[in-house]
Image 1: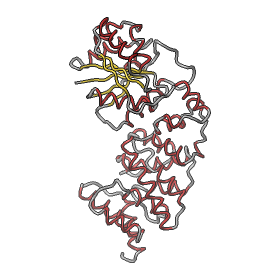
Image 2: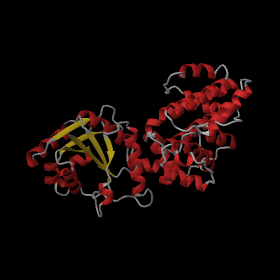
Image 3: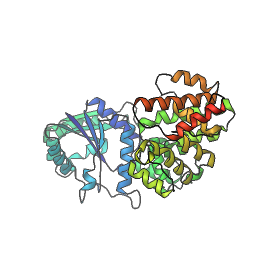
Length: 400
């Protein structure tokens, strides 16, 4: 097993970190890469004030998730859990105990690589792990890195691999933090990391969460979910807009409902129930034991309370999972858009897509019937709202 270790303060984790990680994974053919946020780095002082260690950990987890390499990228909390300064030699010794058969590779940028001999216990570091140095500028590789690699090999027996990142991303973390306070820097960050910063008002950002642009709202929501869900979220958003245009609904409301509809999708049951209690959401017997049914209700509450969504969006999100008798136009649009957006694949989806632009009520009815059939086939209970929505639609269309 080849294991990469990529440490740093990640304050904040940016596109340069992500690009270096991808490049190292490929160049070294790593089986797994650990991001290791430092608690107290030995070579510099952390700037005062936010973010906390917990914030840096959360942002690093968001960046790692955004690489979309499940099983190959992971965030290690070893240094955050250890008291005192974060010394690399100590970290490598612990990881050697945890992964006794692994071939360890320590990843670092040019500046760190050129001063490696001055670190605490450089002999132990280079005995425990190979060194992978990457350059973020075109001038970063070449003679300087080659000279240092030779020096470390001769004096410490180091195994060294130098990597030139194909499309280097030159980012100063200090300049980035300063820029964020001025409303700049978003292009240097993964969108979900930028959303986390806005959502938690880090680095001097003062976003009014109830009046965000569509782009900023999307980033905030992405910070709350898994990256594998982004394509579905964007697909639902764009499908909702197309349906709104077709049926004469408010396209702005449809877009924001699509952006927000799954914002609490990944909360565990305990967190979902706490939000239901906080917002006075009453649950029936089925909902109290089915976490998949709760994100529509808690997501609607968060959309309204945190992001200032109007009642029309609240209602559409609240109903988008099960449907409900008496749905209005936006309710129907979000329900159908969520069901048949472009990444969905199941028997009947193409028929549903065509129907949605011919007869919206018929499309909602088909969605209800597909849901009822799926739950019946799986021998699971069907929510009463879905049954009532189907009966209401049949009556509306004169088929009851």
